[in-house]
Length: 143
Ligand SMILES: [Zn+2]
Image 1 (cartoon, rainbow, N blue to C red):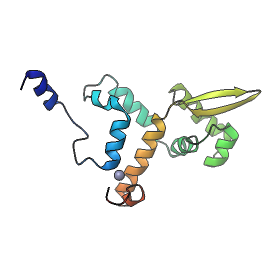
Image 2: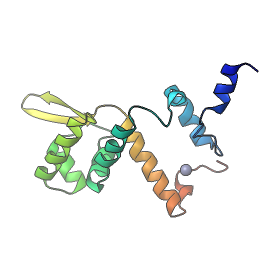
Image 3: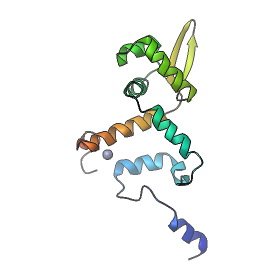
Image 4: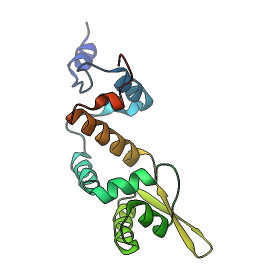
């Protein structure tokens, strides 16, 4: 075996532990996973991403925006918070480039800038289901 082969074998494989079918699909959906290492330059910023999402209202907002772009008022209705509070959350999420806006006449609609926040929230909820032994909700039989 040559040295590059060895280096490849010694690479950290965070997904090596009992890969489920659902992990397998996710892993192959995003080939960049292969290039992630513990010394990644974006680790500190990734922590800020987690902290950006460490709020129940924001998690609910991300979930609401998964399907559709929404106005502040509509979003406020869905997450049962004041439009002012939702506006403030949206401003933060927008600065973090998790949401973007679309202007239509004098109305502004918010949408997810990409699907990363949505995936993070989905996985957090799945992990939460594991935490209380309710993983059957997202794990199909035999997975
Ligand atoms: Zn699971």
